[in-house]
Amino acid sequence: MLRLERRASVHTARAYVATAYRLLDFLAVHHGGAPTPADLTTLEAADLRAFLARRRGEGLGPAAAAREMSAVRAFLRFVAEQQGAPAVLPRIATPKRPRTLPRPAAPADALALAEETGALAREPWIAARDTALLLLLYGSGLRISEALSLPARTHPLGETLRVTGKRGKTRLVAVLPVVADAVANYASLCPWPLGPDEPLFRGAKGGPLSGDVVRRAVASARRTLGLNDRITPHALRHSFATHLLAGGADLRSLQELLGHASLSSTQIYTAVDAAHMLDVWRTAHPRA
Image (tube, one colour):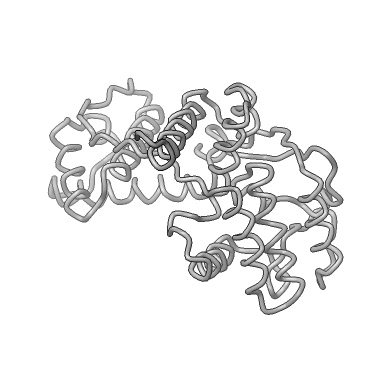
């Protein structure tokens, strides 16, 4: 249901299923026996509060707790539908998520990170791969999962690129010439055959490139450059959005480029841009 009907990602489906198992294990102890499907349709608010308290006691933060309860509600709604019962879910207050703003990298830092990550690679083709990938994240605003899922048939890159994002939604993003050139350089050096339906970005042994490998490479480059720990591959996407907005892009266009389902997800970058301008004013204005 999660994968086919809600078009959730593999990671989301895995997390929701894990939450369902945790809830079942908790209720088996809480009620002194394994719950039946009928039991799950008659849970009370006290049951969910007790489960949430247990998870919070295990170190779950506010944002993670909110996601956990979202998964619980989805599971209980699914069970009710399977039982033909109305999905009347107990209402409980969930922890408020702290309002945090994305931390973009400065343009020079984003480019330096891409170059340094490549410079630290042990082989020339891996250096070209890492540089091309990070330039793609920063230059086109892709999520790392979107970039790693690109098939090799997308090469050579044109002026636009069709990307498949969350819930299988596709969008068109712009491709800068410097990004297209970097990807072409990587493809010319890659020792593995790039079949049309195979991944464009390959790991050292020829398989699909893992996001963890990229994150570790970026962490090494970040330490070498002395950059903030928040400068991650995903921060390059934040940087793309913030720098476009500062350059005059409108929110609707930015929403389409980022693939956000809701404009409210894009509006957070207006606060990031305002915070950046305030920092500049504080450090540069003689009367700040």
